[in-house]
Length: 104
Image (cartoon, rainbow, N blue to C red; front, side, top):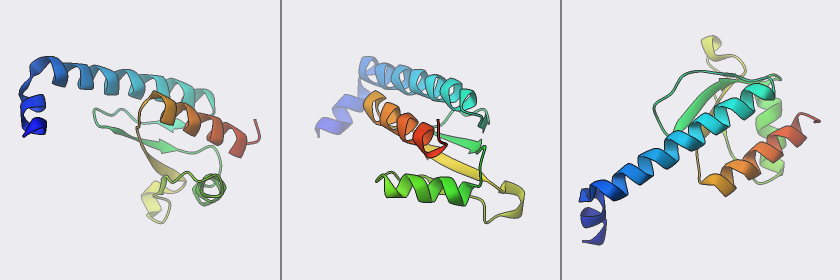
């Protein structure tokens, strides 16, 4: 079908990879500026240690209609979250919501 043809086109795949890479770098920079520790990633998500309790952050974001995964139940991931990357608009909305949730 269409999806198979699209994925087989190098140009399309290359543009998707570029977009994800750009958004991942942008999100890493902006999250670090907000006090997060962001771990290196080649995926479409980021693992980060939040500057506040992960449970608190996740709860505040949920009230704004945004879902990120709280990994804090695992002892080695206390206050860590998994943030899935979206498109530029979605990521910007997420960053604004995180900033507000941190009281900034």
